Length: 239
Image 1 (spheres, one colour):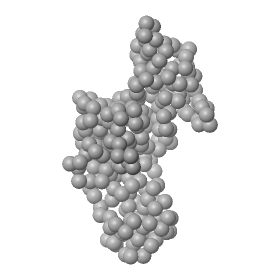
Image 2 (cartoon, rainbow, N blue to C red):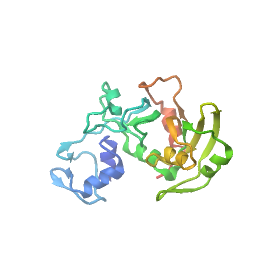
Image 3 (cartoon, rainbow, N blue to C red):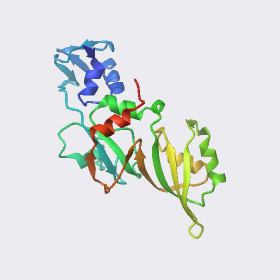
């Protein structure tokens, strides 16, 4: 027997956390009856419906995707803009992105139908490192960037300390290339942090997520993760 929200997450419908809200909102039925109790145990043999659509248990799949700029980190968009799932039309499973990556940012994104896996990786308490490379306006210096290595409070949000490296500076064009390592995923976090030290971002790319790198992938391409990579990503992460 397993909790109902876990079965829903394993079916690739959504994350366990969102499945819990679906249950409390009365959107889930078990053998035709609406269930709103989060502790409900099921065997998986029952007929389970979400929004009146029966679920079935998919085999978990995991992909590393090089998201292009100008693509939304979502499975659909009411303005008909490009979304990440547009690149996975040949994949039968209902996959979705782990966490977010800004619309105008590019780089490494994990796609999966495993809700528990996605929730564990995306939660900031697990401190999975994410490495970004940003082209910024201004000449980066240690003095300018040092505030990023301490806890920051920016417009009501709190960001944990980050690590940085100055990859290059160009005094003539007044631009710099900066690498920033964080383990959270607040909306526009890297941009907000760099802007707070007077280095506004022109371009942003995520180059590393945990043990994963983009490798030889080109923008818009993806590849399956190996079983070893999936295991390595979860090392040290507990419920």
